[in-house]
Amino acid sequence: MFSLPSLPYAYDALAPVMSERTLRFHHDKHHATYVKTLNDLLEKAGRPPQPLEEIVRQAVGKADEKKLFNNAAQAWNHAFFWATMAAKRGAPSGELARAIDTGFGGLAQLKDKMVAKGAAHFGSGWVWLTADASGALQVRATHDADDVLTKEGLTPLLVCDLWEHAYYLDHQNDRKGFLEAWFEALPNWEFAGYQFSAARGRGEPWRHPAPESHQDGRQARAG
Image (tube, rainbow, N blue to C red; front, side):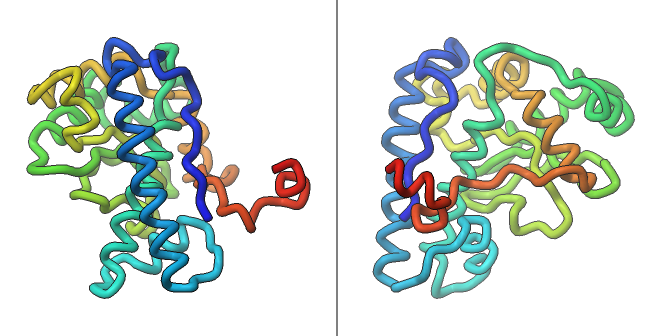
C-alpha cells in the first residue's frame, strides 16, 4: 500500500502563487484520490508490492492497464511536483547553471521556453525540464498522466502541473500567468541540481516513497 506523501512545506508556504486553499484541495483531495485508487487497483489485482516507478513503466501503453497507469503516474507526478518546489526563492548554480546558459542562453530564456511550452499545451498535462546523460537539457510537455519516467534516458529536474486544479482557484484561466509566477518564485533549484547530477551518473535520482512492505525493518517497527 502506498501512502500519500506529506508536503515538504506548510500549506501556505507557496502563496501567493499557490494558495493554502489550492494546496489543500490539490494535495489532500486530488493527489490523495490518485493514491487511494492506485492502492485499490493493486489490491484488486493481487499484485505484489513494487516501487511506483516500476508500476508506471510496466503499465504504460497497455490497454488493459490504462486505469492503473493513469493513477500510478499521477501519484508519482504529484509527489515529484511537490518536491520540485520550495518555499524560499532560489537560483540554479554550478553545473546546472552552466548547462542552462549553454542550452538556453540563460535563466530568462529557460523561463520563456517553459512558459511558452506550458501555455501552448492543449488540455491537461505537465511541463518538464529534463536532462540526459550528457547533461543536455530539454523542455518537454506530456499529456494527462504521461510523464518522463517512460522516456528512456531522461531524468526530470523540474515539473509544473498544467491541470486546471493546479492553478484555477488562484489564477482562473490564466495558465500563462500562473506559469510565469511559478517559474519566478517556486522552483527548487537545489533539488534540480541534485537531479542534474544524478542524470550524469553521480548519485541516484529521486524516487517515490516505497510501499509499506518495502520500508526497512526499523521504519516498519516504528509505524
